[in-house]
Each structure stands twice: as structure tokens, then as C-alpha cells.
Amino acid sequence: MKRQLPLVVSLAALLLFVAVQMFMIHSIWRQKEEIILMRYKSLSREGLSMILSKKKSNGFEKAMDVTDKFASWLISEELSKLYNAYDSTELGRLALKETYSIMYKNEKLTSILKSYIGEAGYDNNFNCTLAIARLELLTPIGNLIAADTVYSKAKKNLVVVNSFKEEHNHFLIEFHYLIDLTHKNGMVFKEALISFILIIFSILIVFFVFGITWRNLMEERRLSGLKSDFINNMTHELKTPLSTITVAGRTLEKEQILSDRNKVLETAQLIGKQSIHLNQLINTILEVSFLERSEFELDRHKVAVDELMHQIVTSFLTSCDGCAVIEEDYRTKDISVSADIVYFTTMINNLLANAVKYCDKDPLINVVTAADSSNLEITVTDNGVGISREHLDHIFEKFYRVPHGNIHKTKGLGLGLYYVRRIAIAHGGDVSVSSKPSKGTTFKIKIPI
Image (tube, rainbow, N blue to C red; front, side):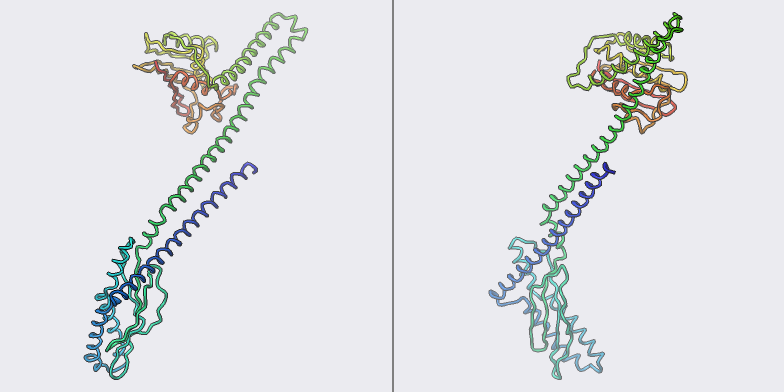
């Protein structure tokens, strides 16, 4: 739980940071929105004041004249046709509808404001909206009210410029002039774009850093597990020969053993064999440590590929008392390669040893060499238990061992294939693997000629 706590706190802090950034984006958007609305309200009123002072006009003169003629026609032609309250209401609706149409067609204020705002360097792509609060027809028998409403607050995209009240020969009107910024969101986005980019960039950086930290933490946890497995395996590997040597040493102290020359010789051979195994384990650790050094260098010599490979295979079979059937197919006649013979031999021996170790039947190994104009390719194929796809990407990592992959009693240290790749890379090449569970495994080593 203690290990999880920093991760939980970090994740909570990340979510809080993202929430704060989202709040900032929302706040910036609202602020820019208010600034734009205030700007257009101010510019529109400045433009209206300008035309009122210079042109002595408010842009609705023509619209009012046409409306007055329309009101005169209604009073003279339609008023006498009224018979009841319903007819009066219908006449009011007609008057309101036509007045709106006349005013939209004949008002000049919008074009003047567009020109003024455009000259000021701002977007003038907007339309006007009119809201008639009161409209009365001045008839000989009294005023006919066509509209009488309480003006409500303008919608979010509307900016109130001014309210007008005029009385002519045949009608009285009160209305509000507004400009409609339906594309306001685009304007806000343009003005806040840099701020949004910086905020989003900062969020991405934080996520990137968190991702790297998370990956490193998982990698550290994985390596910690691998090292624990390595220590456990190493303890087992070291205890086995040491225990055998200890038991053998105590056996030699017994009188009945000392008197039997064959028993003494057998016990001595057992001690020698276990001592060699113990020495190999220690050398393996020392060799890996040596490979980790940045100043690692090879003692290269020009060697014939076919001859070297045959020597390695023959030596391996001799050392393991013919523990496998190895079929050799060398297609590299008269081809030489520059290699460190000791490390090259160890690299091939590790592949052969794994082929024997991870086989649940009589081991059959195919060793093939081939070459093109620039590379030597060595293929080692076995008939062992194989490796599942999920483990193929990790088998060359230090201390990594495929779970439940051991067939023999010797557990191993998870260093053999790591050693193989390091040696291949040191020679300027690399190693690849393909495998299917229960079908065997194929390793391909490529080394420049």
C-alpha cells in the first residue's frame, strides 16, 4: 500500500491540475466573450453618436416614413372594417408584422455601423435585430395598441446598441436596436487561441512526464521482481554445488570410505565436477558485469566460419556427453569473419545449452550458417517447449526467465540470452527469435562479415 500511495497521490494531483486548466480555459473563454460584447457595444454606440452628430440621422428616417404611410392606409382602409375585438387584435398583428418588415428593409443604421466598425479594424460580419416594445396606431377615435410588451434581457449573442421612441402622424413606436453576433464563438476562439494552445501544451507536457514516470515506475517494479528472482535462483544455484561439496567432504572423513579407493575417487570426481559448476556460475556473473562496462572491447581475429562452428558444436557435444542430436548445415565455405573467438564460442554454446535445457523430449538441434555480400547469418533451431508470444520481447533482458519454462532441475539465472545479444551487438550485429509453444524455437544471429 505504501508503494501505491505516491502513485495515487500523483494521479490525484494530475487530475486536479487538469481540472484547474479546464477551469482556466472556461474562465478565459468567458472573459474574452465579455470583452468582445463590450467592444461591439462600445463601438456601435460610438458609431451611432457619430451619425447623430454629423449626419443628424439615426438611420431610421426612411423606415419611419414608410411605416407612417402604411399606418395611414390601415386607418383609412381597414379601421372601418372592424366589427369586434377579434378583428381589432388581428389588425394589430398585421400592423406589427408589416412594421417589422418595413423597418428591416429600410433601416440604414446597420450598414453605417458595419462601415464604422470595419474601419476600426474589427470583424463587421454581423446583422441587426429589432425588438418593438410598443406600437400604437393614432386613429381619430383613439389609439389602437398593436404591441405593448416589457422588453426582456437580450440573448447571449445580442448586443443592445440603443432604444428609440418616435411619434409620427399616424403611429407611435418604441423599439430597441441590437446587433447579432451569431459567430461570436469563432471570434472568441481566435482571440483566446494562444492561451488555449499554451494551456493544452502544458497539459500534454504534464501527461508526458507522468507517462514517463509511470513507465519508469513499472519498469523499476519489474526489474525489482526480476532481481528478486535472480537472487533466489542464484541462491539455489550456488547452494546446490556447495551442499554437494560439503556432503562429499564429510563423506571423505569416514573410515569406511577412506579404505575404499574407488569410493574416494568417485567422491573426489564429484567434488571436482561441482567445483567446476560453481566456478562457471561465478564466471557468468563476472562476464555479465564485464559486458556492462562501456569500455568493453573484443579481441577480434579472422576465422573461418565453417571450421569455428564445427569446433564449437563438437566441443559442446563432448562436454555434455552427447546430450543432443545436432545436425550441421554450413553454407559458408571459404567465408571468414572477424570475431572474438572466446565470446563467439560462448554465444553459440548458450544457444545450444538452452536448446537442450528447455526440451521435454530427445533434443534435436539444427545449426545452419549462410551468408550474403555483407552479413553472416547463424540459425539455431530446436524442438523444445517453445516460447509464447507475450514473452518473446523480453527474453533477451537481463535476469528475465520465461515463467514455468524450466524442464530440467537446473533453474538458470536468466543471463544466457542476455549474454547472447550483448555479444552479437558487440560484434556489430544482432539476434532475433521466432517460436511457437510446443513447436520449438529458432534463433537467428546476424553479424557483419
